[in-house]
Image (tube, rainbow, N blue to C red; front, side, top):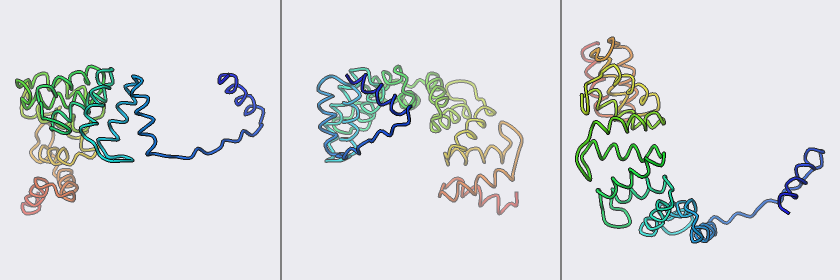
Length: 238
């Protein structure tokens, strides 16, 4: 019946017959109950949506413990974003005990499910040795995956590893490119680091004018290193 109705609506529309759409009365608070019903029927997306509402206190009371349970259910149902959120709660000790080793495992599942944020968080734990051994080689690969998904923090962190020669050989030209990419997306620390490389000629030609401009921009956002670099350039006249 619904399929026939849809075709009728389409036919009327194509024929130029006006189809009146009655506005639906919104009730954001009731959406929690609706998501809960769908979640109870085994829909992982609904469990994840409700978990987010509880975690952030949307349209009702904040309940981090409840959110953590819902993210667990959704993650077990194969919802990659829910795995990322669950990993974050385990990582930070939200809604229950902190468990970095398990957070690392859950981030792995999120990343395997195609969630770039999960790859980024796993890379961070690997680079810092949180929840297990340090593995900066793999961290590079995971940051690169997340950077290719336009996560500016991943581009910046990968740039740091390449600039410092951590997890492999140093590659300052590539680090400079990554800092520029992250800077263009609004990452203030990336702008400051790019300015430093431009001042020194690291990874490419020196460009004092561009370095000055980048430092000024980052300093306006109260970035300490950028303000220091800007002050130094103004004193030295270069």
